[in-house]
Length: 377
Image (tube, rainbow, N blue to C red; front, side, top):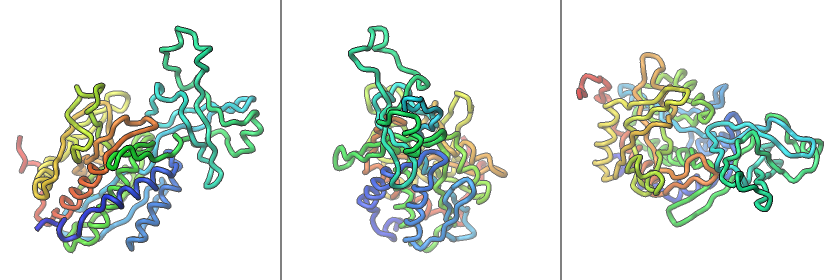
């Protein structure tokens, strides 16, 4: 009998409800407190004690079989966006990017100044009036330093009085759009969807009688050079680290040459990632974990897509280097239009990912070997 049968069915509705509530909370890198408090309440409702480290990671531990390799199951709770760098005399606001914000998708976007609960303010990234746009401007992507945000206020003093100052965090306006029964869109699908999946998997993992010790981490500042999970891994020193994040969906006309990853095709496992711009980092998963997730997917009859890509990376790139090395793997869900203000994911993929995690983690026992020499290629 699979461990899935022991814990009941994964709830698509709970994942939907969690995803909606989390996506409607602003949480720029370094300013994740409101998201963390929501997650902390969820964990408390499950009877789990949590702790928050100085960087802001939210951590909980399920004590389990001490003879089995310990697991860190983690996903990031922050989102990309901007910080205010200048306020003009006429009240227009200039910003710096935080994370990989695509410049070509910024004009005319609605944003939110993350000031405080009940005090947040909306704004729009201005787009030059079409009637005054010269022919040579029509196909030009405006660099972000030239962009400005109009928050409806007519002076620097009014902007400051509203609570907007240098350094104020700014995110895409939070929204949650149900495109169909299964597909949803909005900002911060990356990675509030991962958070929703982790919460649902956790509800089932706590019911397993012989689960390994599992450290749950909702990490911070992932979009700001992958910082949070490294600190958590340094403190926890797990044997295995399983990271949850998006995987690029390649089923649209502009992406089909990259891979066969499809929205609605089920969870995905990364077999290779590399980022050649600046960081020169990436991750190749531990072969024991690849084999284990493949077998777990077969056991419960879950499709498992496979990804190998360049141009993106996750926190496992740095987590794997902690101590004598941590066995890592990136598990994810297909996502379209990444880092835009309207990312798209499929609830069926999220549900199957949660189901696969429970099966795979629940069957890591005392005989689970991380000896690489047992997996020659």
